[in-house]
Image (cartoon, rainbow, N blue to C red; front, side):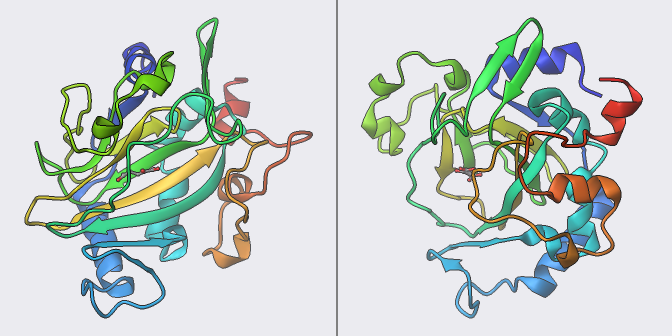
Length: 262
Ligand SMILES: O=C(O)CCC(=O)C(=O)O
């Protein structure tokens, strides 16, 4: 359940940490799936985007039923309904694994009203709505200074984004308004792509392990390709709805929203 404090924090920061979404057993199970399907060697892996000490590959949601379960994990669907509306859909998904020294050399990106209208943050009369938004699931801790996900809290409402200094954007200069949220394995972090965010080099001696499940409101797609429910392990009705391509008219709402007449 999304509390009033959650809404306050998300509106304030543009992201929120959802603690203990996954049990220790779920984290262990998913890490085992990762070891089986996505080997640890950074040299021998084929068919994926290799960037030195960073590995990324897409459609991790179909690796195994335990990854599929994350699509509508009961710990996260209340946030999706509250922040994207009841027709939310899975837009695309991928993992980011990094070993010590890993650096995707990206810059802090995103911001309000970017990506041709796919990325936005809106509030009206107590209702929050976002465009493309991300649930990052953590299967390893990210402690203070470890790196990985970083953002500029509050920047989803910035009016002066063009004044954001390039050297801070490119991590050449550190400023306290860029933060790296501290999380534990099993936590999830929900953020709007309207938030300025990016990836800091990974400095911990354990591997960074994250899945990023990106959702859009039901009528929007950022991705050029859509999901095929036949690629999944007997998807439930709710999962089929979340995996369906974008549409506006006649789109079914999430089951829980029907129940609560939301
Ligand atoms: O988790 C990260 O490292 C940042 C991901 C990112 O840049 C994005 O979602 O666009």
